[in-house]
Image (cartoon, rainbow, N blue to C red):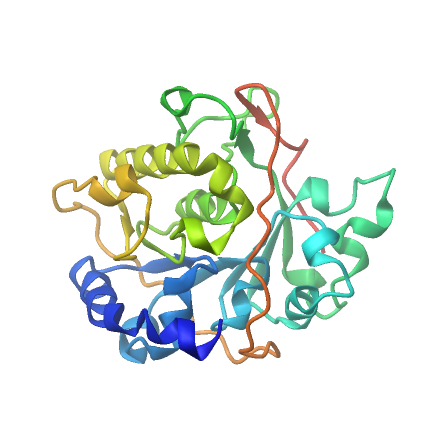
Length: 285
């Protein structure tokens, strides 16, 4: 993101810092929208205790503990792109890859991340299954759960819809995070993000998963003062009853640069209603 564009959003830093502090977060999920690029200017003392989650090349903004990969290595993540280089050079503590983008692509095996990631990070990879909501159905039909087991395996799956940070939020919950802040999922019209076509579905998904987390004693809060997700932004439950977790050790620097390139192209899954996208959750090591 250019310095000229970023300057327009610097005024929001105090509000973001206030929301982080007031909600006593144990983790943060960030996308690559405008407000996420403010993270290097956020008080380090507020961010240090948090378990940091992002997807794809979000690690170019600040290092992350957990990196979620849901799009395969093609189109905007093709090996010839700068975005791809940020992913393969990152060294997060953990990588979570949807299994359809890991090793089961028989038709296009060159697209799967198992062929691209450095051997150094392979022991840190978990191949993860998500239950994927169709991003074209009516928003009122989207009803994600936190504890819905897969009927075939009995394993509880995280839900997702249209954008990778949505799946990162539910996975963070399953991994023990209970007070989660979401930043950089602004979905502003003039930024041209392809997921804008599913704007209403993403809004409904995040609002309802926030409600589910609150009912379970946790919370998912919007940290962005400028998000266009009206339902998610306006949903204000009473104070969460959960106690902040200890989070994880602050990650060391990764090899990604801080230069901007293009915004992420979201994974879209034209499935009827909600279906699991993969077959099993397994270790990649």
